[in-house]
Length: 101
Image: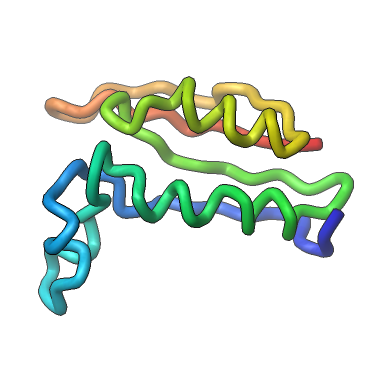
């Protein structure tokens, strides 16, 4: 286990062409690449490693990010999960998921 007690991550999660992720403009703030998961998938193993034994990761995901797959990835890395909040915001269904050991 790592040394970080709390991680809160609102990643760029909007599905977009991968080249949009490398832009210098505002679109880079939301562009998440394929399934909106490119940044998320890079982040997940690092976050799992960084969390302390009593730490929590709060991750914002949208339905198009396939939250069940992200949960499975973190479960495989030894973390448990619980959905803290689900909310509809215009055309997005957002979830805040807590991951912990």
